[in-house]
Length: 134
Image 1 (cartoon, rainbow, N blue to C red):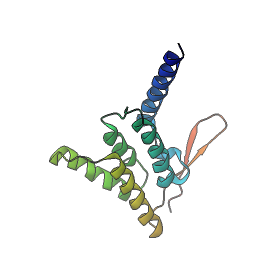
Image 2: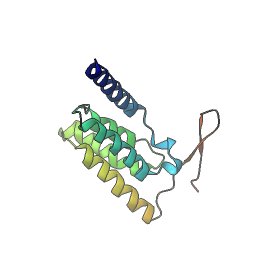
Image 3: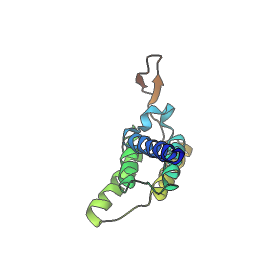
Image 4: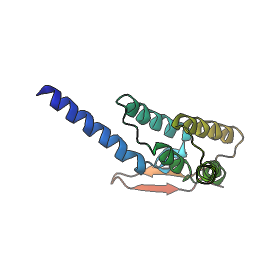
């Protein structure tokens, strides 16, 4: 009986993790901080690797997440990746996508090009965007 409960709880946890992935939005993170987003996504990905339950289309989800920031130059990197998948049938490993996101973000922050919306979560749980761009 205990094994059935453990298996059931594990399956529920995996289901919850995989259902959160498509709903993940970088815009919900203060300043659209890609380092924080990568950390959260990497954590979710690692939790799915252990039971070998990584969705086959996880790369698609990750690319789409990083294509939808308020910083167009950053988005274009992931639009190009998506185009390469469609046109040239290329594949990108999830860890590579996360690494590219982190590197591109750090380069843009260091060069002063990362000027993103900031998100505020009010007491009712609604998200509001503050435009911090100049």
